[in-house]
Structures are given as C-alpha cells and as structure tokens.
Length: 202
Image (tube, rainbow, N blue to C red; front, side, top):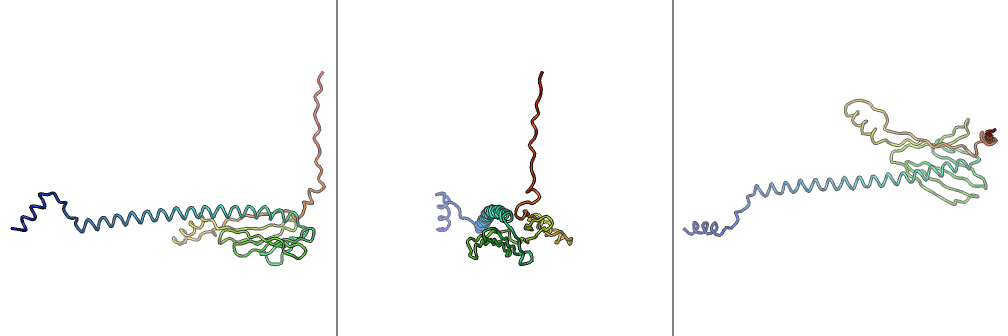
C-alpha cells in the first residue's frame, strides 16, 4: 500500500520520468561522432594553412635564389665544377669567388673575397627534389636543373601501382640557365637607328 501510494504521488506532482540507459548510450555516441568530425575538420584546416605557408616560403626562397644565381653567372669570368653536378665555383673580378653546393634539398651559397668568407646563404627546395649543376660549353652558358616532386603525378602513380600498372616518375623539371660573363655574341652588335620617313607635301 505504501509503495502504491508513493508511485501515485510522483505522478500527481509531475516529476519527470527517468532516462533509460539506451538513451544515454545513443547520446554519447552522437556526441563522440560530432567531436570526431570537428577534430578532423580542424586538423584539415591547420594542415592546409601549414602547407600554404610552406609553399609561399619555398617560392620566396627560390625566387631569391634564381635572381642571385643568374647575377653570379653573368658576373663570372671562370666557371669550375669540382664535384659532379653538386658543386659550382664562379670566379669573379676583384679576387672574389662564389661557391654553390647542393646538399639534399638545400643549396648553399658562400661568397669569398681574398680567401675570407664574407657572406653565406641557404636556399631550400621541396623535399624529395633532385638538383644538379651543368655547363653548356658550346653556348658558353651554365645553369642548374631541378626536378621537383609533383603531388598530382604522385597520387596518380600510387593509384596505378595499386592497380598493377607502372607509371612515370612523379617529377617536374625546371632549369635556370645564364650566359657566363657577358654575351660575346651581342658585344659588338650595333643597332641601327631607324630612318625617319618624311612626307613631302606640295
């Protein structure tokens, strides 16, 4: 009798019914899924921001390297290749030399004047890049060839390997070539001034 009266009093005063264990488990599962999606989205956004910043930084470094590399070759009076494609020494006037060295995905530039190091720079390439110096003796030019990994080709190669097909190497090649010293073919070139045409009027 007491138990029945207690149950009746709860219903009369409008107390909320209890939550079942199944509802708690479902709510926890939904919360876990939403938390996982939010964490994945945040990780993707941070990774994209990091990759964008890295690409901009590499682009700025390569632009500075390209400008200085061309200027150094133009100012050189002699070019030396002490190592097979990994080192380049440019002898310049006033007993100054510029040495470029390739180590993995880094390019070191060391300026020496009268046997003393005066300046040192480091330029970075994308990881996995292959670079080498070369000389075109017939054209009196020197340069650098860089093979950078192509993300799109890398994805296609992975797909082809998973399907059992062979793909091409995932690299895109670019080169920087400059004439050593001044261009002797254009040194004695004289441009003719165009003659002015006169219209005679009566």
